[in-house]
Amino acid sequence: MPSHMNQNDATLSPQIMIDSYQRAYKHVHGRTPVVRHQFGEWYYVQGETVPRSTLMAETSRLRSIAQKQRLQSTDRSVLNRLIARLRGA
Image 1 (cartoon, rainbow, N blue to C red):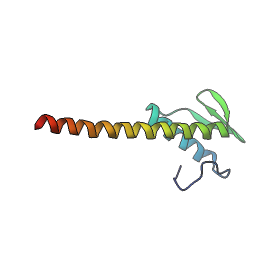
Image 2 (cartoon, rainbow, N blue to C red):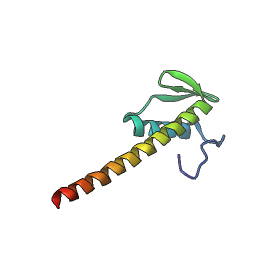
Image 3 (spheres, rainbow, N blue to C red):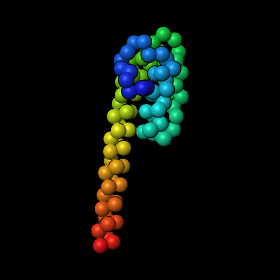
């Protein structure tokens, strides 16, 4: 979902909702989940039918996890470079 869009915006299309969830899920789990818009406010997600609000909340939760993973990865990279530099000294 583009960063300038509010994920709580009721005008977001089902495809934007699906794309956002799939991207967030893939960042965390490394694979693309099965997601389909059913009808109205309902989506089929990994074998379960869930309301739009649940899909939005889960997308937000996954984004938070992905951000934490990126920060941990960055921290490890900095630490590894420091260790390599110390070993070279």
